[in-house]
Length: 142
Image (cartoon, rainbow, N blue to C red; front, side, top):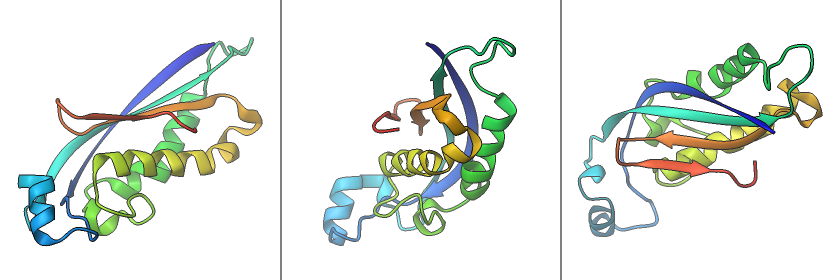
């Protein structure tokens, strides 16, 4: 099994605020990240794929096909957006990086067979770096 991880960057803002919590609970849960005007990040998204090496190409994935999929389905929709108000389909609750990573994985999983029919390469994991201290990874079930 060969693995390839592709790295992408995008900038976006968000406010951590859950509709299920009171204003006091949101402030206690999210601290400064609950600021009414939000804040921004330069996110780094890593998409990891795996599969066998096909004989002729020697590549586990068509990089242009993967880049096109990620650009069209993910980056073009998230770049320079407010994740709390403009990330429909990605974040259904508080715009945490955990919810965003889960939404990105779901979106890629749904359109994966159209770009990569036959099940290979497999989408193995999504890593989303929010800050140098915060990285979220999801790998089940992709």
